[in-house]
Amino acid sequence: MNVSSVQKLCIHLISSAFQRCRLSEGLCRLSVVLKSLPASTTPMVRVSISDTGIGCCLEEFQDLKYTREGIGTEKWGISDNEIYNYHLNLRESVSARRLTRLPSNPKNGAKFSGTEVCLFISDTIEALLAEINHFFQKMLILKIPTVAAELVIEKGDTPGLRCENVFLTNECSSLHFSTSNIERLKSGLEEYVLKHGNTLSDKCDACFSSREQLKIGSGVACSMESHRSSGLTMEAVIAISELSEFPCFRSCGSKTEVLHFKDFSPCPVSQTSLNALTSIDWRSYGLALGSIVDQGKYKTQPDRHLIKKAVKLAFDDLKEKHAGLLLSAHAVKICSYAPDLASTIAGLILTSDDPEFQSECVSILGLKQYEEIGVEMIEDCIKKKIISVIETNDKKPEKCKEAAAFLFEDDCPQEPIYFDEEYEEGEDFLNSPD
Image (cartoon, rainbow, N blue to C red; front, side, top):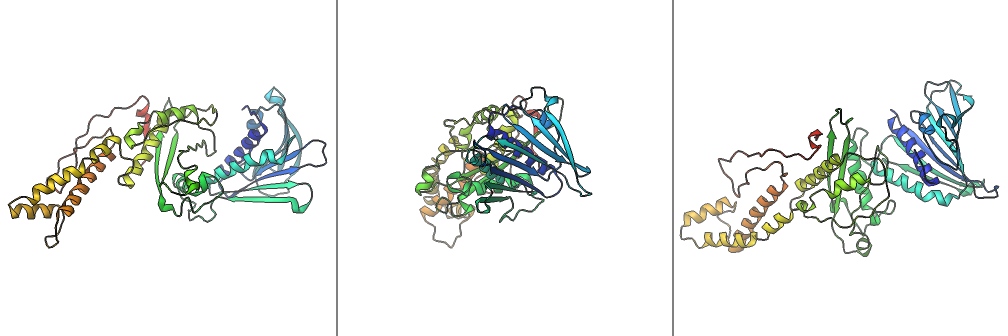
């Protein structure tokens, strides 16, 4: 793997440590310590990244390419009797020569596993701190329950210059360890959106006073294992917030932000993901796609159809939970005719000379005979039923067209009619879990 900057090198090493902790069966701790070395003539920072995960694979360091720094690593498996020390020379072009075995340290019979990576960087702590802190804050969105992380800053040997930040994923959270990944992502995204201007650290009650102002939908799409695919899972969560009149919300509330995670690690949105998002029929959800701000290039290309499927399932989930939300442009246009249609039907009922007919209409509308029934009450009731039918039919996916729902109760409902499904290329390999 090619790493283009010191910051990206540190983020890659921290991300690898997170993966080792996530794959471990028990609780793990991840520590990142940045210590400045004032005695040196040029700014120098010692970066230590340690975890108590499953232990690293040396191949991940052999494949790492960076032209400026050397790295010292330690690895220890739970069944090993020693702590193995290595020196990694990133300037070495031959991967087999990058690692140099150093003297080992005994574990003295203790049972533990983990990895520590140390490197010295010709830079300042401030140049590294912002991006590392941002990475940790983004990882909190995933709410991985088994990992506690800390970021320690040491400037010189003075005790008062030591600063420590602890990131606990389950802090003030009611989620259980058995909670699914998608439910954790929903909870994490809610907390992220509740922060001031979608920042990662500052909560603002002026932006949102409660979670009730948010509408959350989720979708999970899976590809079956075959000769064409190894079997992938894509999880999508969409959060929609109500507009607020507060200036802090208006300054940044008009944008839609896309967060992308691969293998439980934040990364830029790939071109394939952008293609999947732009290929969605946004008008069917009453939305329009505006300009796209590129986050940077990301080479790994996930399955486009899988991304599109998960996002559409998340939108459908939102429409199912919230009546009237994300109506298509066609449905909105039809709804605009509902008041006139309701007024016409109400006029026919009230101008009828048949009391029995009027009584039956009132009963069908669900109104009580003893109530004072006026024109506005009947019009409003009919309009609500018309709009309800339009919204119900707008929720149905394009691939499954049923007979239109009835405005009123019917003792003999028709059987739904299903048309043949038309799949996009590659979508026949997708399925959605129950």
